[in-house]
Amino acid sequence: MNQAATLKKWKENIMAEDEMFTSARTAPKPAVNPRVMCFSSGKGGVGKTSMVTNIALAMAKLGNRVLILDADLGLANVDVILGLSPRYSIKHLFSGEKTLEEILVQGPGGIQILPSGSGVPELVNLSEGEKLMLLSEMERLESPPEIMLIDTAAGIADNVLYFNIAARQRVVVVTPEPTSITDAYALIKVLSGRHQIRDFMILVNWVRNEQEARKVFKQLSAVADRFLGMLRLLYIGYIPRDTAISRAVRQQKPALELYPDSKACKQFINVAENILNTENQCRDDGNIKFFWKQLLGI
Image (tube, rainbow, N blue to C red; front, top):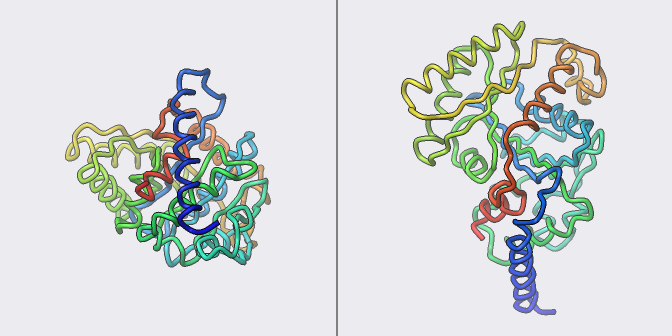
């Protein structure tokens, strides 16, 4: 089949699936809806990638199929923190060398990782055929994920905003450091001011206890309320300072796998449950297919 015919077939398949999705919206809602969550931070060094990997494992332990998209461009390290060595990336899909199923890396606890390598920056410049190829491959997965967690870079670079805009839910990781709080506010300000995003989940890391975490959240919330107007900042929990996390990073394993009874790991479970219990109506802007369409401009 030539390229034109293949492209036409992909379009027809996606249009047909869209019609099925629309007609099914009045049907009973599934128990778990596909969800896309973006984890970001105003500054680097706040432990975000460790948060993502352990929360992903916690969600998997709670019975969900979870996929991590490593979108920290240029400094992708989800694979490093998990002790994995991906042989392929998204680029191998576009070159026709591998299918998406072959690119995905199996991580601990059944979680999957979609390694970006140097391929993610090219997502903004894909041809129509490449966009449809990625969407088609995602839909062909034998066991499609119920949840996708995106680990972005720190800061307010275009690629960070790019993933946050396309995602259904956004988690901002912050620590008690004044610079972390200030930079988290800057991220929220840009996303709300330029892109009209009003809902953010706040995860506080590296605190002594919940009292300190609540204090950090109140500081951030008070500034946002004063200067940014009507926003919804939702406190979803905290992760305490715990040597179990740094030991696990050195061993290139999730803390939740090595030290499940540690204080931090008990909080990873709590945070995962809190996120899963947040409002998630079955809307067409809440599922993984819509995320890819939004991200790729299809």
